[in-house]
Amino acid sequence: MKVVLQHLTKRFPSRTKKGDDVIAVNDFNFEIPSGKLIGLLGPSGCGKSTTLNLICGLEAPTEGSILFGEDDVTRLPPENRGVGLVFQNYALYPHLTVLDNILFPLQNLKGADKLTKPQMMEKAMQAAKLVQIDELLERKPSELSGGQQQRVAIARALVKMPRVLLLDEPLSNLDARLRLQTREEIRRIQQETGITTIFVTHDQDEAMSISDMIVVMKAGVMQQIGQPQDVYDDPINLFVATFLGTPPINVFDGCVKGGMLYVGEDPVMAVGGVADQQVSVGIRPEGFNLDPQGTFRSNLVRVEVMGRDTSVVSTHPASRNPFVRSIIRADNQVDRTKKTVCFSLMPNKVFLFDAQTDARIPFTWEAQK
Image (cartoon, rainbow, N blue to C red; front, top):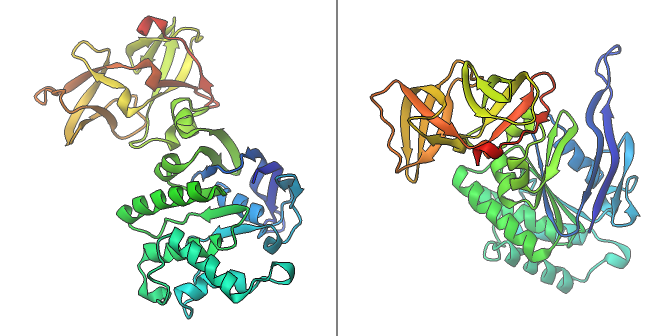
């Protein structure tokens, strides 16, 4: 089911008489392809959960429209939209068994959609098997682990085979190992069912690992849409560049003079097609090559060996981060007796941004190939 959002805006009235309205979602335009898993990504308060609530009908938009396929569902009640919603806190009925929790949405169907008991049981069993909890059907939610409760919540959302599945930070209450396992299960389930799925999270690792496309939001405004790797490799502005990536991108104050990029006082690489100006410089941690003759110099703090990679932690007077983190191959040996470490830079991992607007500044680097 294709989902189309057209000029979607949501304003909340100010709590004070003289205050301005709070714009949670601002002129959101996006077409979600049928059968894809889309990650809505951004920091807390960026409007991603409000966008989800607008799609499912828990909130009414101030402006704009929502289409499921060719159907305008903007003013349609949530129960008539054909959506399945999984909450962050699971929202299971504690007095009901797993089976009864899954059956509950089917028991409330009316009219032509009403099912017989055998039909409901068959659908509930199919949903339980899909999320691999068919051996836990007689348990109560209090007898389940967090991961098992999340699977029950997903089964309950899937049992009616919704047109659109909405997941609102479904992994936030799980520990790190279980989060990894459960997000892989969500991807498997989505691929098996082919249901268009919208996954809200503030965790960029989650969004990038399982999404077909990601939508990065800030302060209610969509910043960038694209395939996860494309957005990572080609961020449109400084916010997107800093939000995506673990460890985060290193940011420096710099300037361009005569086609040469300076970080601090050091000329580090040629950047063609850029006028002389002050810039913000972003360098991905994997964009450093250990090189005794390298033009980028920083003050060595420590070296962290992480198996196949080594993390070189240093400081630089032009850095906006407390530390500069450079990821190099573990077989590269850093001279820990020296106070300074030198790198050459990978041009495709270096990004320039306007010092005033934070917009991306393209440059050419043929001479660096």
